[in-house]
Length: 116
Image (cartoon, rainbow, N blue to C red; front, side, top):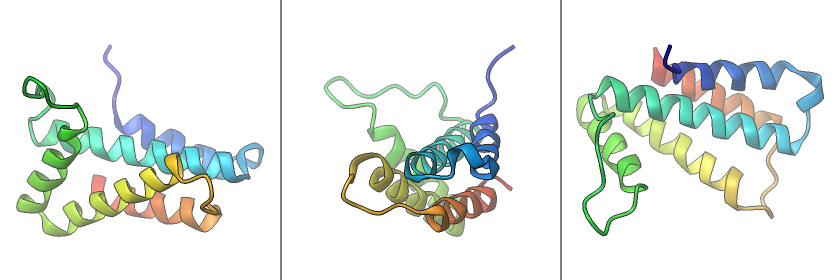
């Protein structure tokens, strides 16, 4: 049985509700899992799951392709995924940024609007 990307969003939602993860590392993790759940679901719905980067290109290119393709098909969802990606990048790479529960809640709300 293959893994279902939507399960990343479900685990993000569960982590947000779990008091053991009620701290910045938990919030950052919620944001990351929410993004990857939406990104992978969108990639699969768009038929891009077998996409491979061109020789010499990085795999990160697929994120731009998925977001751009989603924007062309559903501008609002594409914009939401783009915002969620920025949130994920901030949460994963900007250790000086304060990431709180409200940020994690916002990420889950965006993710749910994308995957509907």
